[in-house]
Image (cartoon, rainbow, N blue to C red; front, side, top):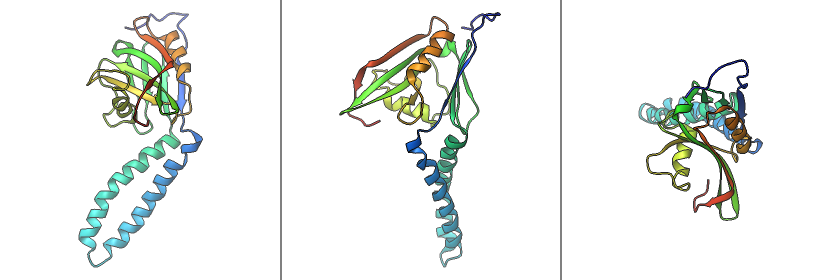
Length: 200
């Protein structure tokens, strides 16, 4: 589903999704915890039960190190969305860019979810097949949100939250409408929040 290229081909749109200021402490805390773990592990290895305890600490630390690298990536190399006439591309902080041709995109929508008195907004991209690593944040967030939005079990897609990333989901819709083929459905459903018992 590749749009024709000519002299009037619209310019691509790129949006950087930086962490909101209130969440900057998350990667900083992860870095501090990783440094503390490294110092503690070294001390444990020198203790009387250093071999066993040190190995346990080292294995547990791998998960902490992964989290620290991931969160640091969001701080130093923010997530970015690129939209052009041929594809929707997501560049993860710690992963190569994941390019999805418009053939694989079913719907791009801005949605709102109400939990109690709070209403949060998301950019949701429904896909025909998986994109990005299974444990990546956009895919895992889509799996959590899909039942609330009435998606079928096993549906594929990506989700980006305004409460975490400093962007406007409806602005992204404008770029998609301008660049995506007519077959891609674009919806703004923020005026009708979906109710959810879960906190997102």
